[in-house]
Image (cartoon, rainbow, N blue to C red):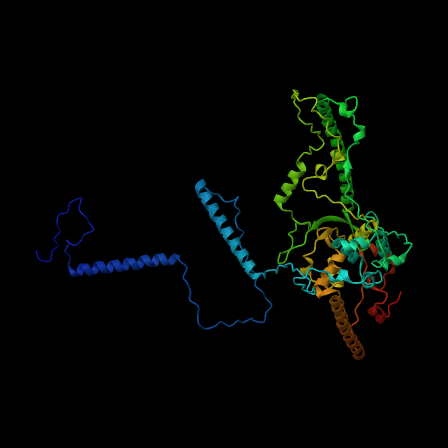
Length: 554
């Protein structure tokens, strides 16, 4: 039939979405489309009713009707975040661990990013490096090995090295240490005159008050060191004997020595060796204990150092740095950090037991070897020599301990060395007095002593003679050092004069600002100076211009 729909029979398993087999009229198709559009619009309208409609910003600016009012809108309060304890979580352990790991990673990443930004923003601190200074005023001798100084007449040498010259005590000690020629001429009497002329005093590490030395009988000895005659006063190397060979306390055969039999001599030598080993160990123990006692006394003296007029406790020692090396790393207390390997090695050495006290008896077999010789050919050996009763230095010294023996013992030279090592100076005073830089001071070994103003920043105590020698090397010798100090003094005098002229002109113009002059008092002197304080604020000097200008008087 024309215009009727033809619907094919569909099975239950057929696909209903395929509508290609269904024939429809044009009017019916148009009505279905209209119904679909109306239903979609109604559906969209019902959904948009519950949603908030977004408004577009107008292009015309709004005018505030009450712009001059002081009303300030209150800031909106943020809702407090819920704590982790109040949240109810029903996640499994796996999800929790994943979330925790994510948050940790994000936190670490953010922290790393922040650290990187801080490092980029902060300027890097410049690391101070050590700067070695060498002598540059010494001439190059080339291949010459002779010494023209020793060929000069004695009168010329007296004029160069007498006590009337500008040589310091350390110069005489250095000459005696490097040259045997000077060591022979600088006798104890000469050093006595040097110590008296250069104001060397006897001191002790327990107190600072120096003791005056006795005046020498003849002061002219120091003026004529080379022109007067002298006798060689070098002493031989000292030897220690552990016993006397005439006081042997062991078996000795009867009768004259030339009549001893071979068996008697063998027994005599065996008993003598046993007795010698025992007595020798006693002597070694005595020498070792005496050396330990001296080293302990020296170690006690080195626990204190005099800085200025006060005695300070030594906290540590710092070795000098080489050229281009950074300063020593320090801990929170300001002390140098010791290398862990070095500390372990020192502990191992300290824990090693000392077996020197144990007497080492030689192993002797009970069965003596019978030596059958002809009695006519047997002759008793000669008597024992003195060298067999001596103790060699390597037997009572430690493996790494050097053997020190002074062939020219001099009491006054030792006093001069002690006086030189006693005078120390801090870093600030060294840079101010000798005009050396901080980088140059890093090359000098120094001590760390207690600081009364800060327990975490110990003071650095340098040897004054070492800083003076550093200044000589840096400024081109003693003459160059004097010239540099003179140039600095002239420059500072010109600056002070110009400053004074500007001050006078400002006072005339009435534009000068008077400032209070505070009193500079050392920490230990505050108790004695507290009653001499001047000024209305209680901390001005007695010559304070501001107080005098204000008309304040005590």
